[in-house]
Image (cartoon, rainbow, N blue to C red):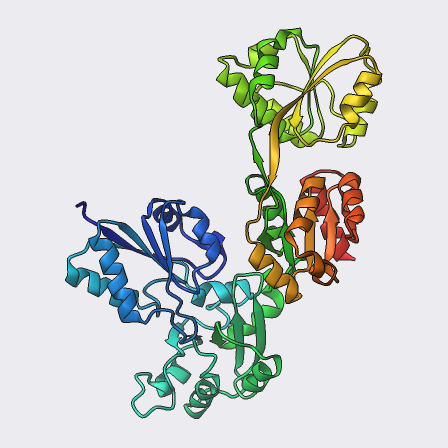
Length: 506
């Protein structure tokens, strides 16, 4: 049996983009991933489908598995010859019990590696606009566990030195013990008017920051009902938050947006909305798959030289067409005598990636506009190949035939209903925790509605804003019972993001 190995990997503070490059590589190679409550679930996107993932909890004292059982699990999986990633929130060696797990592995003779992570002790204050050190305020900082009961008889914390000897104090896991922490600091000589900040779910779109002073922060926290997980920062540097608070001021901060686009194509929209501060719940309602039969497209490619025009209506059409072109042993040179048209800049750009520049790109990005553009071309008797989705609207081939063109409309791909994250989606809709639904095609609208229980449809979407990439998609949404609030003027992902920004900017 091959030798197993364990990687103790810091998952970072919550924002999945803050995992280290080394940490992400370990997740990609892992056979087994054992992860905590504070390790962002989105990090599991790096994990192979064939890998085993095991959730071990550890949420505010409520453990799915106690630490000794977690230790046994790590050792057992490694002894089976697996590459094991123990994914821990923050950094494994900052109050993460990573040292204890590493000791156990060393005693068991199991090879291990420590992959440091960005600790919430540093990241959460940074995202709240609080530098832990600053030349005008302090040159010292201390990290302290807040999980220890500060009133117990034999505390390992020297409160008298800590209270006045360090400029900035950061307490981790201390929300429940906040009253005791503040009392101990004031009793040991810290000024009751020292600024204090609690940061919950730091670096995520759920980040909440409560600011007060040592003598009133307990009341402030109780007033807003702040719960763990949160860190506590004590020190004069908190005064800089008024100037440096950047993360919570982003225009979509605190909004939860559902992205219904196929997962393979969702990244651009997710990135745009995330950069604006939104939490994106990816709930792809469609997946793009090959057609049931390649033969019609293969035949068209065999006879590609007989066509006058090649018209693409989507990036998917371009990708699937060239996949089959290459599969037939041809390349872009086979298209040297064929003129091309594309709906939208994204489709045109993808076509350019394959070495073809479009002869026609309409001013607006829908089938009606490309029909208008063709009215300037002599189309009578011209042969047109239209490789596109099996379920596409008929307007384009119908209008081209009206102009006298001979149109071969061929399915280059088809869409199927997807149902990923549906349970999470419905739960959050029921909780009123969804702010915005985004639809990028009529099929995303139809499939999204099909995912919801019919008897609950109206109640689930009540109060939820709906954004559409264009008027065709918006019409489909209205016919299916959605109230459409946002329609992009530029029928692209960028245009949709801009329309959403303008809506919330108002």
